[in-house]
Amino acid sequence: MDSKTIYTKEEEQFIKYWEQNRLKKKKLLKTMLWGLPSGLILFVAILLNFFSGWYKRASMVANADPSLLVILLIAGIIIVAFTVIFSSSHKWDRNEAYYQELINRKINL
Image (cartoon, rainbow, N blue to C red; front, side, top):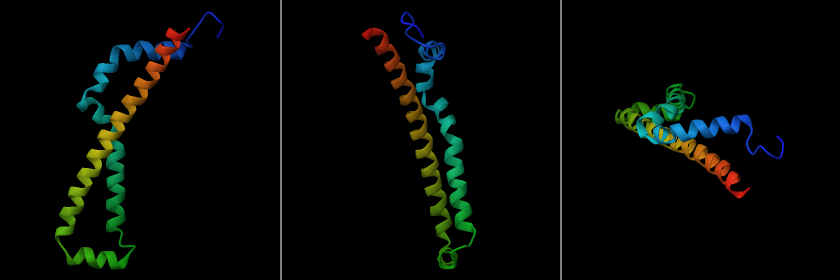
């Protein structure tokens, strides 16, 4: 990068991409799809841990109260929803901050 160019090729591509897609990416439904796999993986890991039976006392308590499965499913839905919303908004914020940093670099020169 010489003194006349401000951005690398990747940075220029990102600026063009983000200018075109930043409002699309902010929409809730589309961004939720990015965080869904991580939320589901976390919930499946919790279920596997719960049903594996590695801790005998926890298994006894789980078998004694049938409503515990419903509570676990509700908690799982909440965990997945939180993970989906948090990860998608975090990814959007990260890209927006990077975009603003690149734009400010051009303004300050």
